[in-house]
Length: 270
Image (cartoon, rainbow, N blue to C red; front, side):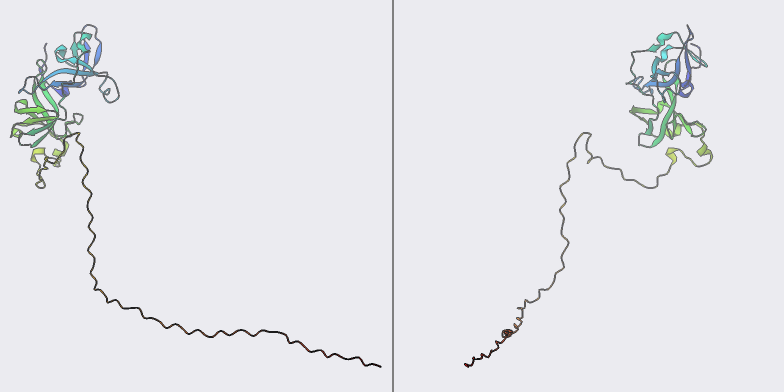
């Protein structure tokens, strides 16, 4: 195996993998998988490469194929392997990590940035340094964002999405690119930013563990607003009003026609 042993992750991404026996194209490198527990205290080792049909397959579609780092025979413009057997069909990446976007903090909790890449030994797979920036997005060009290199010897411990380094590790950082914002004087490193003010840490004593149902608070007792006191007025008996005297009933006169007397005439005897 004859090639430069130290490589950056960014140098491997997008490189085609070709078989030596038939010249078949197996895919392009889309991911590097790290066993962070291997070589404890040394930063971990790259153990495998993820291959896809093209670099955009991860965004569009297409399954990832896994190839062990030990299958590489030569690295140049392309990566050469012996044959199709370099593809592993029965290997799981569940216990491995790609380290990308992992937060890097000191023992005192000071943030140094996020991992956007790393340098490693292609033969042994051992990590040599981490590439850190304010954002862990490898897709952002180096001309846009400032990045720094930190030796893996500064790593104290690792965990899911977090890497803890020794206190004062920011002094061991080596700048490898100057971003556009820094060139314009608009950006600064995370550890050089001044806080606007002290923020009291939130206590976790009252926090519930996951899956515990919180009891509803007791109903709040409503207190009636104070009433204004009024002096009692003496109760006075009601004044009786005199009833109006009833007028005597007067019957209405009846209009009865009077009977006229008719004179009777006696017949004279003749």
